[in-house]
Image (tube, rainbow, N blue to C red):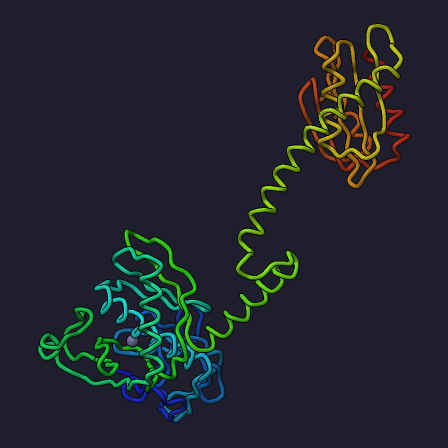
Length: 396
Ligand SMILES: [Zn+2]
């Protein structure tokens, strides 16, 4: 059995202990001590890390009445060792965890909205509330929670029997039997909890709501406390400042500015598309007029400047909408693209023709007998043009 120092002394950062046992679990080394200040993952609060004598504690695990320390090196059994908690990490956890008590109590006291679960992540923490709430209600609860933070109320811990606990106004029915550890925020909250908390609410710093979303009939509230609130402020400030600079607007005008840009861009896309279709028609007419007929089929093989793969396809489509055309159009941009197409009344297989070209010049692509496209060809435009002309003329 491990004596858990953090139950009674949550501010303890270093301690002396005796190594009771070493074990191996899933290829990892485990140390069990007679006493520890390392907090193992439980109740939504993540584990502590730190040093144990000469080795690192990588993870701390709760295993019934023992605390397991996952370490990265040998620690001799029956020796005394000094444990040292990574305090920056632990203090952050204490801020988030105590902040959660205050926030959950605020939702409970103002709106009788119960917290069903709590999760602390690396950047954000969440609580899930039973019922849905309006944004204004969430803000009211956050204001109330911050008021309690800034009043710097005492946070105390005491142990009671389950029978005693039943007579007390606990925020949540305790699920455990036997002795219960109660955490009290003076005149505001009383909960059964095994986690670590700051001594006074002022140490939480502030509570910021990062997001509220619907979740299982209620809401999931994402929040940050302490240094995380400052970090979030910096990240969001930089993101907003960058966007504001680019759009030359004030922060509160960002939403409407982006909406305006989206509408403009949609209109431009429509206009461009219409113009491209018109232009492709003209380009097809020009190419058709300039092409010489070989028998019943006009073979059009050209390099088109300034057209992308989609544009090539459009010109080719306009060309083969006429009868008696076999076409291979090439764009010389990077990557080099090619479209092979033929009219319905022409017997050439565009897909097979493209395959022969790709076999010779590399690149990828494919298509149907009437239209095929490829890209990434290696070779000069002149070589590819000559090959395509030969293939299309031979079949026509
Ligand atoms: Zn707690």
